[in-house]
Image (cartoon, rainbow, N blue to C red; front, top):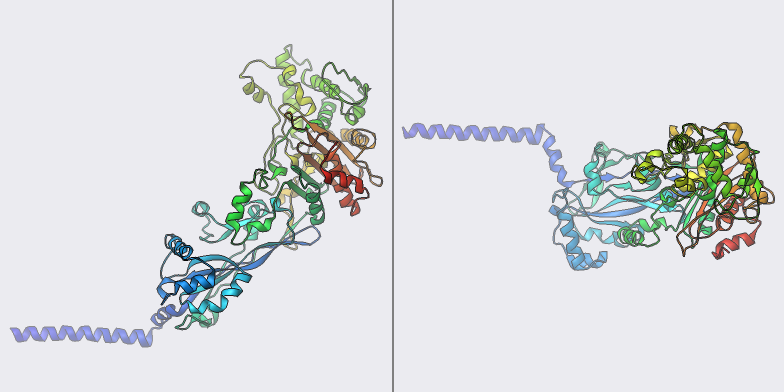
Length: 604
């Protein structure tokens, strides 16, 4: 019995041994897959980050480019005889900082002791050059090359936006699966709006290393490598010289400048004041700089051209005039007395026609005009009559692009406010209301709110005699590309084209002999403009507003300027707008005294 059991055990052991021998033969001789897996211990998988697309101005001047930076990654399984004191000396860290970095690394979701995990990030070219020769002293530590944004000048920050590491929240919301922890994404401005076009596509390289961790070339001659694809370059309509000049003029002021090419809708300049240097939101100091900028009481991150909502002031009288002509409650020759017992006014004028009322910015004239528009005797009820008139008025005013987002290629655009009957129903809690309750909207005060980009677009609409293209920054995606299709579509107002000649005549008169004559008039260019002075809470000065386009015929530039707490529109805003027009059309100003007046910031 025992002899039989012994033979069975011997046979079993023999069979097991034979199986192992056969399997070992297959593994070592016939099947190369396991040898390749073993090689994995000597192979470093390195992500190749793509170059983000470059950004140019309308004259092909480079605005945004890429500069190298480096992350330091570690494979914990490969770390041997780690000299932390030496590491701190080489990398300029304290022991506590190093411990904190390791703690933060190990709690990340993607952490594995067998895979490269980022320990230090965003070393500049200079920092990396300083530590590069010492990196082989620390087995298991590797450099990962990537790029960060760099800028040719400290201009256009609010329009460009910034790039930073994707947040955990946004990564969790990424349904595309494109992004990984540590990837950079556009967080605002052009960088965010055109993220899909700018980001490119990452690649992967597999590199061989020796026992000391030193790279010995590509694995299998790059057979498994995939190349990264760079992002598309963007060509904007921005004139960077004009942009820099606008920011120069806005120093020490709060407000905005928006300049548009009427024939295309391309934005020539988008100035938000105060602003910041975009280079501050790159590199290792991004977090600390972002905190400082975001806590600044002057709100430099607040993009005023798109996000600030103001009363429009007297520039709104042109829209009122166009609407009244369309509704046929007045003609260009209609004269209305400047009755200051009804509403206050300014300047010496008495009984103007429509062009003269615009040129002299007559408040009683437009008070009377709005009353005629809203109370046309459609129904025998002053409350119902006003409601019907306001609905028609709102339809015309919003056709200019007021009261809604225009759709500019930037995030966070606000829509402003053009009141409707439903708005006043809510405001008066469903109690009756009529013209005498809301007449201040006649002169651009009251409940009206506009955004600076809408003001510039309004000027472009008049320059085009009744239509506009949606304002946009990017005129071409790729060198031979085009803008996004929505920026090539014309938008027409509800106003007959023939009435716009009245607005053009009146705006020319404003600058030639009206409220804009002292600082907006140019010797060699016919400028058409309109001043606005927007009420502000005492003791602050009123806001200064000006819109314009030039030249009168075949206009090349339309502009809006809004300077907070700067007084009359004929002062700060008109001066800045005329200087910007000179700069764009003539290359510089012939009126250094006006430039100095603006820079002195004393608008008296």
